[in-house]
Image (tube, rainbow over all chains, first blue to last red; front, side):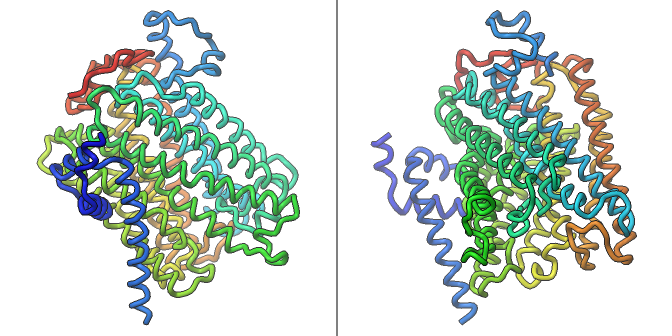
Length: 66
Length: 528
């Protein structure tokens, strides 16, 4: 497992989380994710993604009301 | 369903456990416990439904005819609490108990004794809720959201409700831990996470949501309890507290709760539609990702329930945008179900009818949800029948229809007998007709300004209310037909073939006899 997890780059985690937020993913990419990403990476990535998501909405709101 | 396992138990296995009532009290078998959950939830569905009939009878005509206003408020409050915590949630846990081990090739749930305990807490909580009608002051009457100050002022009924919620929460948390542990640790060899059926995936994510938010609910009702009896002022402005804080904490639980009640139904529909389209689920991976995405988003949208409670514009816009974005992954799911049916070799047995009905009506509920998410509109429709119509489209034609689909789909596997297909179709079409008759007109009532939680109304609302009440009585009676179908199936249904649904591909259909034996997968199957 640790060998496999070494393969995952931050970019890969970010990409997987980003697609998760939209809710679409190609099967081949998903299988690749399943082979390389560990649950811990996905959970941490998901939490960071959620924080970024919230911050980006706050940014849009600020732009709208400024 | 005693009859079901009576057979399998009698000559299948000779493991000396008690018979009669003690069998059900002491059982640790996931099938027994699943069965009890399902019967319990159906009993509570009838109790909650009876309260709904009382509400609709009172609203049949303007004026006060049947229920005094105080009792009417108790009816609306307990109808909501019983349906959410007593009917829908335990029903899904019942499905999880029956189906999760069968679908992942596990012999039972991970914590079998805790499983028993989490079920047997439920009748205690239900007794507290129902008996609260008979204590001085009657049951809680401040709405199922029990906002203070109403809930800090109510009588003993509110205390009983608080304890019931505590107990139900403990039961849900134990159930969730059990489901998470079972799914993560007890899958058959070869059953990787990405091979799991969608129903299992949706329950895994739902269970995490439950573990996240049920303690928040427990916390907020405890704060309510200490405000009521121990001199604190969390929600009392006179003592420096803030009643709006209750609403924030409650809805931080309450909005994910909505998804707790809908994600497992997504899972059931995602099993039924591929089976009766005879095609694999379109975009399985998208479905998994969309479910996870909906779960995360559900935690950052709670204040859209409180746009009129007073909130800065920044807050209103944030929660409006975040809420509207949930439509994206939800839309992905709807498109995937539709694409699964596209050019499939479809047949329309009762489970499929309920699933298609689910998609059709859930989309209406979803759209009216997006409409409510828009702040200027929400400020108009807040606390009107528009909101009532919206969430009944999500919870009745969403969650409940999916539960019916699942019950018809799996009853042959559970009992070894087939239900009456003709009556099943009648059940579907009558439910469909009466459901829309009841709730579609409530959109018009809401837009015309009829407030929720009132026993009397102005004359201009009379016609639509009468139509809605007629629909509700029809819908209620139709559910007795469901009870009849299920009982006659269990008692005297035709023997089910080994695999009644030729398009089914999950383990319970491919690797187990019908009915499923009392102990299944003692040797785990090998999944390729």
